View: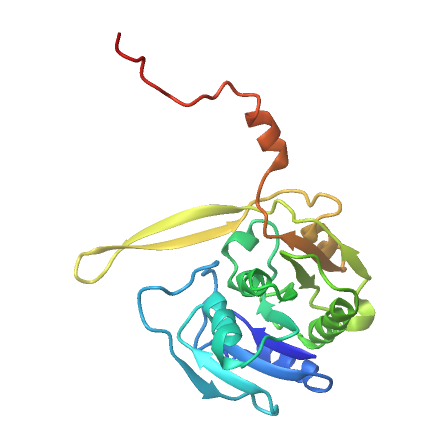
Length: 260
């Protein structure tokens, strides 16, 4: 199994190292990851400056690795189009510190790394751990290996990926695996306006989770119950429900009345 691993926490992230070490035993592992943290970059790609990749390494692993000045999506594109020489069997993005659920998917560099893999037609997984403090990556890393092997065996439909969130618990304490849907977790956005020592205005964008109940069957509901959440995600963002509604609107091409 040829595996391309990326992330948005940077090539020095312990979550990425845990993933690499877990795959080392049974895989041909390649790493293309950002030089430094690129969290919340979404699916940004770099078009207006040169992209660079330089050989790097993961301590304790023989994986071939490159660090880049690009985003997670850039990293996957560089790997696919040049660095690996040929396409991998699977792309794995993570392990992210903190969950990626609900509306997080719009902003997440971790999910976007896997999404870029899916755009290239390669089965892809995004893996996150459900805690920002004292993360323990062992269970999440091993589950990623098991899930990758299942994907190689059974396949994934075209233009799809799997978004995985793992409780920050030892394996025996995890309550199982739930196949979930994307939840509606939202953030309350805040803007802090400040003044620097020279009197110039600057801003910090901040936010906090909005209080809400976890709907049964969603990613956040499963994680709150101590379950690993596996959410199938599609690249087609069409809202079929809204499409049917708009189809009933009296829309027409505007035109001018011809002159008599």
